[in-house]
Length: 249
Image 1: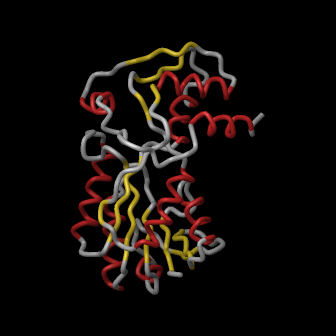
Image 2: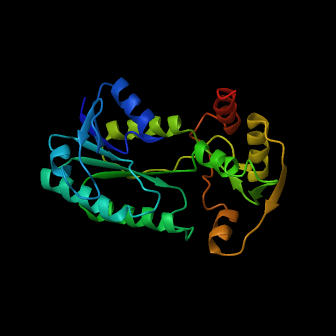
């Protein structure tokens, strides 16, 4: 099996991805600024150690993100290092709708897609819908408010484990360009997802649907963050919140 470097390998998506890569027999290195099991030391922001971490690697899975707080420059640093050592495959994790919803974080993701496509490095770009954690976090942040606000549109949340499974498949398949988007098994109104979260988290608040002005909300309301057709994901949001909050009781 190939040698794989994972950026963001200690994050919510990175951890299950690293586990599945190792289970599949890959030699996995996790880019980190700190010592740890299987870690290689490097800093994407400063560029220190990056060329050394990609040297001898076949595939790079680029999962690291600061949630839109300056992801473009670190990605350029990574790509420069990959070019210098002749990396054969870069896999990038993006988000469904980055080209249709004018949200700041999405603009960065789209810009990074463009950088990778223009780099000349053989690559694969995967877009996925929102993770279960993100949707649950939207409601959990409001748990002490008198009302839980839920946007008047649907989500199609997907488990990080399902996304990790797809990333491992793509890493093994070789460069494929922009591959079909993936989404969770259900498209449900945010109000219904709030009810599922509320039941699991034992939070008793009124749920109030809201609409907001602007192009970002309109993009979500139009469903540009959803994936039509058969779902890739298998785990439902109800399953996720039952495990998450049941474990905390």
